[in-house]
Length: 401
Image (cartoon, rainbow, N blue to C red; front, top):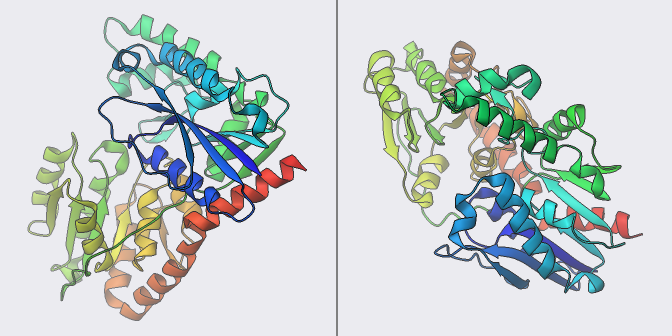
């Protein structure tokens, strides 16, 4: 089988690009795959990711394209990706667009070859790809646009123009998934949410992101309970919930919370920590990934307290791969990855009291915590590059036949 892949960027832009790279490298190593060709954008000044075994067809992107309204840049880049992809269409058995712009590129290819588009967030129904307002699921632009603008800080004098632009972008995005033979969603909650508000392809599948963890150091252990969070310090990540929960641990006042990451909420979170959990919270900021893994591997648990529908939640799988259980909010992709009371623990989003109860149980029941970690490590194997690539091949095969 010959696979033609379209990806927005070949460079190290973010988690979506890393996930696509892992899938393509895994497919290139699959015994039933003859070739994998990746057509993707090349941003100046951004290091290109390594794609062993994959034939690359880069499309040069100028910086100006990233500084124009994304509705326009989506169209421009989509057409440029399609122009290059046409050179490889005739030899392909399946064509797979891995991101939003590359999905638009796919609409410009006139081909009978089976086409697949991956949906990694809420872009088909939400013009800002988030579909969340003040920590709750959005009800759509018709109902929540004013609240959305206020939540994003866009409710100034220019708000009428912003509203018109967002409505136009939403109309542009909705329904595009039906132009493909199949859609892959990286989580079932995304498939359900998108399907409720927009038409999708006749064939759909859920294949979670691959997560490869290379841990080169030794776990940093302590003689007291220690919990870890790793995320941007923004409201929807719920870090305040984790801080309050640790402050509730009256029987374990030596418990520590290590917070990796930075963001606009850092100052307010530091003030909160000084008030409700004095001396128990350590803000580390942005550090090398291996330092995060060292702390995570030796921690009692990782806390993932997001209050919004995380599309997937890479941190969950990273922690599981290191044998550390995750205590996560029961929302979005987090609740799909964690098997409650088997590979981790779930709590209602925003509920610091229930989270504190879970943390206390892990402090008291060390054997239970260890068993969660062992089962988590085993469960994480379904997210390896090889496993996820095999799932993609099986789905391609069902379309080709």
